[in-house]
Image (tube, rainbow, N blue to C red; front, side, top):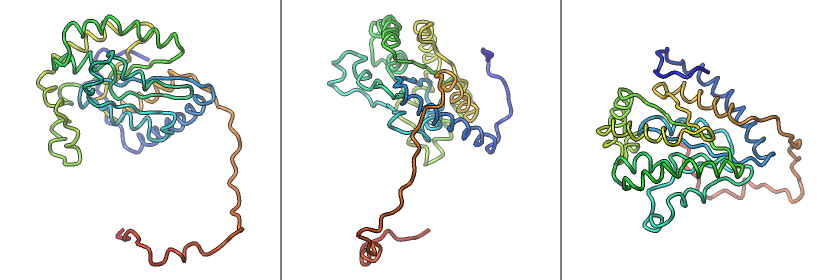
Length: 269
């Protein structure tokens, strides 16, 4: 596929077409998860990007039709006082996949390359040390048999501003405005420079970054799912035939009558 340095102008994807293609890709993801379980694969998918870049919706599209026992979502809160005294990557390693698992990180150890660095939650020395060590740590993960897929969602300045304004006006989305979101608008170029430093240090041959244009959310979600399917080769896994057993009549009784007099949720719809 071509690697576009600049976003291309395209018409918005119609919802019906989007939903058809999303369903098709999600069916493939269900087949992929069976292969992951069958072969005992270990996969990590890292999602990073600016605030309001569309990580949440993209991750939902990826995980909403597969088993949470196979596709495990990890979205860690701010570190506790105890975690702050640990090795930096220690709190992430405990969530790494066992055989037959895909772990999806909604933000990851790359917090140190982004929000921690820009907002002053780590020192310049800690930031530099992270960028130096990260490629070697990721090489160790890959050498141990883990497949690592890193995706950076790139949203434009204009679109991020529009999404923030939409969140302010919508009570269903106001919860998405965290204390870190609004300062990120003011520090757009600080985040851009942090991104550039991160890509320069950690976009390696063994663990490359894939940049996903996300101004068009629907196209971004479809492109992301298709990319992940392309990154993990899979085949149809053998599956035991499942049959629904007949209901046994042994010990039969009127199991609905005994509920009479119990409290029920009012049927208002």
